[in-house]
Length: 112
Image (cartoon, rainbow, N blue to C red; front, side, top):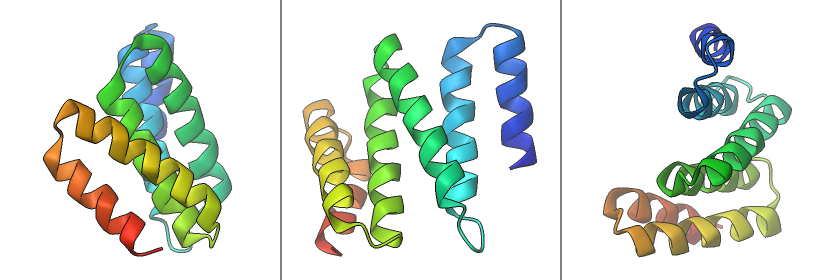
């Protein structure tokens, strides 16, 4: 978490928006996988990363943010929200031919 926050601060300080998206996602992942998960922090950072990824046209990263949000909502027992993000991730990943991530998203959706 600390390294992700440091990377985020550096990316913002240097106006490196592409790196900012990656750092936002890293902080979201760290929060989502904490014990216990920090769902609020994870969701906020995933959403911010998703918005910036969409603005920059970084579709692969946007798809992975949807996957992260789907996983998070599945863990926090919000199946409708999980299904929405996982379905979006699956569609995007299939369109881009990202087989590894597509398999992971499909597995998450099947677990609902």
